[in-house]
Length: 269
Image (cartoon, rainbow, N blue to C red; front, side, top):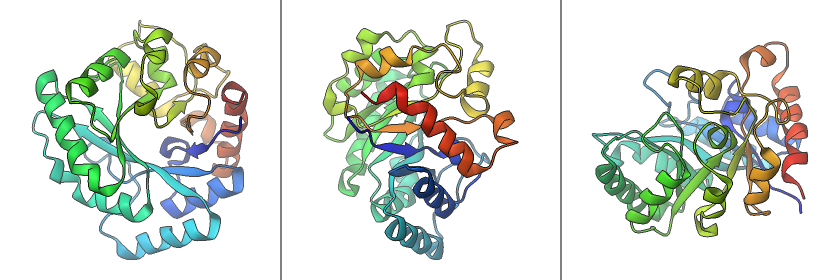
C-alpha cells in the first residue's frame, strides 16, 4: 500500500513555508508540516502568522505544487492554558486546509490538563483540524497510556487524536500492545525517525536528540518494523529527522530526499 508522506518541520527547519512546500514537491512528499508557533519562547519557528502576504505566497505554492499542509506546530498545554492564545494559529490552519495541530502536555496536574485538552478540542472544532496529543517522556504526557487516559477522560472529542513519534516510542515505557490499543479513530498520522532506544537517558539528552540529533531510519535500534506493523497500514507518515551535524554538509532537498528514501522500507507494505 502506498503511504502518504509529509515532510515534517524538523526535517525542513532551514526552509520558509514556501521553500518547504517546494522541497516537498521536488522530493516526493504529499504534504508538509509547518512550525508557525515556537516550541518555547524565542525558539525557532517559521514566520507566517499575522503576515497576509506570506500567507498568500504559501497558498499559491500549494496550488502550484499540489503539496498540502498536514500539521501545524505547536500548542503546549501548561498550567495557565488559554485556548484563545492560539486564535491566529487556528485561522492560519483553516486557510491552509491543515489537517492537524500538534499538541504537547506540560501541566503536571492531569485533571486540569485533561480539562484544558477538552477545551482545546472544542475550540478547534469549527476550524476542521484535529488536536493530536503527542506523548513525550519528558513531558506530563509521558507515554501512550497517559495520552489515552487523557483523551478518554476528556470525553474522547470527535477531533481528538494521539500522535505516535517513533523516537518517543523508543524512549518511553510505551509497548507495542499500547500502540495497538489506540483506537483507529484517534490516529491521524505518525512520525518516523530513528535513535538509540532505551530508558536511561536524562531529560536533557532526550530533548537534545529530539531537537538536534535524530537518526535516519535504520541507523538506530528503535524497532521501526514492529512499530509500523502495529499502526494502521494506511496511516500517513510524517518524516521527522533533524540532525544538525549531518545536515551541515547536505542541502535541504538532498536531506529531505534521503530521509524519505530511508523511511519508505519501514512503512510501505
